[in-house]
Amino acid sequence: MSQPLDPMAAAHVSEVAVSVELQTPGMTINIGPQHPSTHGVLRLVAELDGERIVNVEPVIGYMHRGYEKLSEVRTYPQINALVNRIDWVSGFSNEIPFMVAVERLMEIEVPERAQYIRLILTELVRISNHLVFLSSYPLELGASTPLMHALREREHVLELIEGVTGGRFHPNFNRIGGVKPAAGGGSTQKKLAQDLPKGFLAETRAAMDRVFGICDDLDTLVMGNEIFHARTKGVAIVPPDLALEYGVSGPNLRGSGVAFDLRKHENYLPYDKFDFDVAVGENGDCFDRYYVRHEEVRQAARIVNQAIDDIPTGPLQAKVPRVIKVPKGETYVRAENPKGEMGYYVVSDGGRIPYRLKIRSASFSNLSILPWALKGLLVPDIIALLGSLDFVLGDVDR
Amino acid sequence: MRSGISVTTSPPDDSTPAVEASATASATASATASATAELAARMAELAGADSWSAEFGNAKVRVDRARWVEAVTAVRDGAGLAFFSFLSAIDWSNEVAVGEPLDETVEERYEILVRLSSGKTNDSVTLSTDLPKDDARLPTISGVFGGANWHEREAAEMFGIEFEGHPNLNKLYLTDEFEGHPLRKSYPLLSREVKPWPGMVDVEDMPSTENPEAEAVPSPQSPVPSEESDTGAAEGDES
Image 1 (cartoon, rainbow over the protein chains, first blue to last red):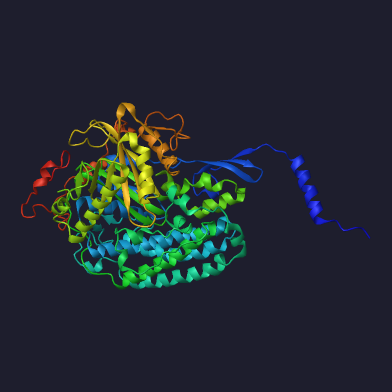
Image 2 (cartoon, rainbow over the protein chains, first blue to last red):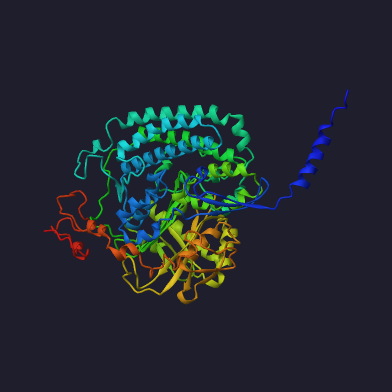
């Protein structure tokens, strides 16, 4: 009968053997720009020590379209079509802070009904954006089923958006001083009751029920999944003070435990009329960032339900001059977009085109935390962190 | 016409200018305006700045270039504005290669903007400083806010501003071979050089039957609104 091998001693021996035999120099590997996990064209130059990441240098700019320069040769209404392509997963939300900034400079009071329609669509876009995240993130970690379920429900939300605006992704629906009159109605549409498509409110209510349903499904499919926990809990922790310092905003900031939501603090849309909660994480790890967005879908659906209950009647547009000339001045308006704080610093000299338009996009700052957050992690955690930040390269590069 | 107030010396004696200037705005708007002015004055005191403005809800403090890093640090620590929103620049230029030139002559300079916000309240302030065009250098604030690193790299390549002490001031968006600084007003937009922007025709006045609701506000009675004369109707006149 042979003596059983002491497992601890064996492990010790093998560890020594490995460290002697595999004395490898550090390795630099290139990830992307076409890698599926990089959500587009992001390139990472990673210095590795075995499986550990020593340093990561993100290389961006593959999607740089120069919107800030292009805005200097376009009139304000034309820029609206440009900016809703910045973050193409939530196109409508990009328009809001720009419109509000122009309206603030022109001192236009937007009719209440138009504000409500903006708000409803913003929240629908938030649901659509988050459903993409909530389902594609597990896919990146190896679970493909949630994608099928969530995208099915997202289709209903997109149909609602399409019904109102005529577009699924790039509605270009806002007008300075309000929103575009109904699809098909045209600017001569006098019947205010026809501004939203027939049956929109009832269909929205039904779609929100389905959204609540998919949230419950994801609760059990993803949030309670042991493998998902193992891949995300305690991985890539971003402490709150660091998140603030790097300008990380939106769900990523709240995942780090900072209960800050611009919908509660800024008055760009009448959010103060609605009852909703701000979801906050505890540890700032990948799981918390997922949890915050998961909860935000429910809250967004709550807001939509309240808004369609008491949407006021009235005009869709304030009276605006036919030629939009923005008075001299500068302002900054920011909004809580699905990706985080999106803002526009508009500098006008009194003409039809802005003198300077600075676009503050959420993903750019969110991604700038990457070199810090990845240090010391394992290679598979790159995918976990990248996915949990929920960035879009169009929003990073502008 | 401009709402809000602007001062070039220390805090104002009272808030009456704000109320007068925005007479058309509602009471809540003027209350917001005075809150913005109060915030701007407080930040200016912290930053040791001698000029601030609070127009259109934008609290803006102008600090001296020599006190840049100190001012940013003081606002962060003194007022708790720990959230770094963005850093960018404006090229104030009298001659422009793209877009429309300014109406009035301005002092040729680069204006650096930094937006800092609170992570608890809606306090948010723009700090700005001026750089002469022949000496576009500024100490980096990437030591104060780590997030400024990328924003300064962007401003450096787009405007040609040198951030002294920056750890890694190479190109961010552009390729290494790229020459020039695209967001400078002197930098032409090549596609516009080849072909003028056709979209400008769209914004000429449409025949008034097209859009009866959106009639020009200033003079609804007169058949030809007075402001149509200065819209530069070069190609499309309404006959």
